Image 1 (tube, one colour):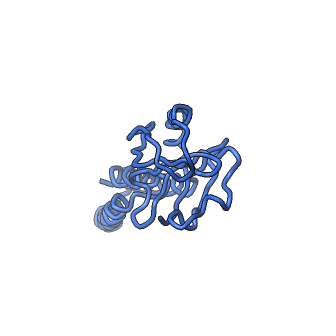
Image 2 (cartoon, rainbow, N blue to C red):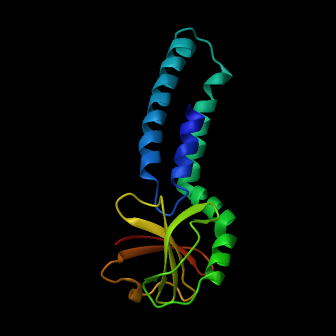
Image 3 (tube, rainbow, N blue to C red):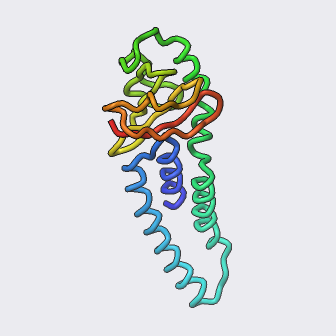
Length: 173
C-alpha cells in the first residue's frame, strides 16, 4: 500500500504543476499506511520486544519518495524521456500568428497535450493534468520568457527553466 501511494505521489508531481486528484488520493493513503505502521511497530516491536527488519521498508519508501519530490526528480526524469518528442513537435508545427492555436499531437512523449499556441518568441504547450485551478505546461522559448508572454488571458505566467530553450510554466487563463 505504501509503495503504490508513494508511486502515485511521484507521478502526480511529474507534470508541470501537479495532478491534484492523485495527490488528494495518495496523501490520505500514505497517512493511513503510516498509522498502520505505527500500530504494527507498537504491537509487535515494542510490546513483544522483538525487532524485525520488516519494520524498515515503509519508512524507507516514504523517505525516498519525499527526497525525490524535494529534489524535483519526478518532473525532471519524465521530462528527460519526453524532451526529444517535444523538440520534434516544435520542428513540425506550422507557422502561425502569436496567440493562435496551432495543431499539435494530443500526446507528446509521455504527456497529454490539450492545446498548443504560437506565442511571442516560441511555442506554449498546455498539458492536460498540470494544475487543477490554473493551467500548466511546457514552453519552447529560445530567447527565454519575456513580459510579452503575459496578456489578458495568459495571466501571471511563472516559468521554470528545464534546460536549453525549454521551460515549464503555470498560469491563469
